[in-house]
Length: 138
Image 1 (cartoon, rainbow, N blue to C red):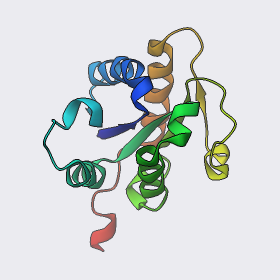
Image 2: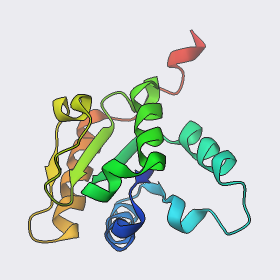
Image 3: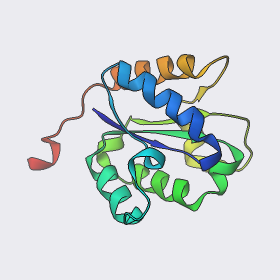
């Protein structure tokens, strides 16, 4: 399963740590900060990655709630069937301006380490099961 990790630039190091953990658990991870090179068409590459991902982890911080890129990625996930049950907010630090719809989802809060957050993300992803890649073919 490919997991898209959405985050503000200020949370890039944490995103990298969570991504590495997810990869050790057998997930493919697309992190725009590391996968999109300078000079690439950012919007095109992000769009392709969102279309091929089946889950999204979004790191919630004050910076992330102000990021237009993170907001757009969340909107895409909320409107796409492949992310149903697989949009996972991870609270990096308490944040006031979180979109109301995200507050209705199961949240993971970073307690002591990114590895603990990664373990919780893996539990949610495994509980959601593998996506039905043929759901739209019928």
